Length: 146
Image 1 (tube, rainbow, N blue to C red):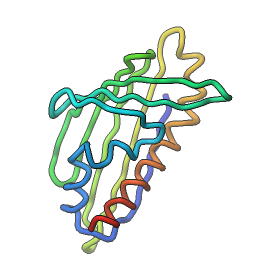
Image 2 (cartoon, rainbow, N blue to C red; image 1 turned 90 degrees about the vertical axis):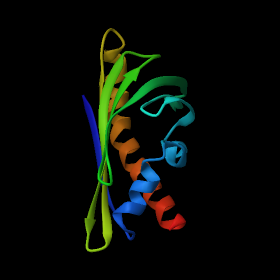
Image 3 (spheres, rainbow, N blue to C red; image 1 turned 120 degrees about the vertical axis):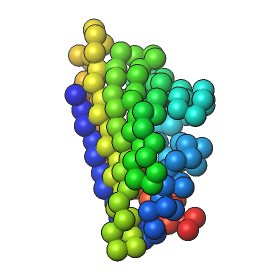
Image 4 (spheres, rainbow, N blue to C red; image 1 turned 90 degrees about the horizontal axis):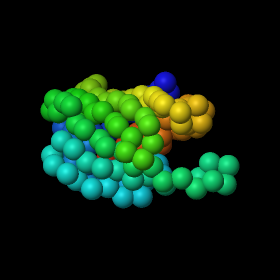
């Protein structure tokens, strides 16, 4: 399993962070390798990512299911590969610290089946970078919009 977690401090109140991260449309394009997404309902969406590894281009689709909305502090989700055999989970947390917000994004991904042997090294390399870049990008956008 690959895990990535990143924490940032954002100079805004926790409610402003919640207002941003609870609206998928506001931050979807911040996910590294993002290509497109489709909202199925308020708790489910399909995400498409496209990236290159060692000059090999790969498109990956994943179903994202929101498992918990706990305003203003927590969003939990599960991932299921549609194009490849992987599963995962993650969460956003936001905590008020003296009028500022400490936000953490954590993502866990596990590749399975026959393709797992091929995907695991890529996932172990990519997941920490995705968590870090996504968290930093969201923090920058929130700071700009506030």
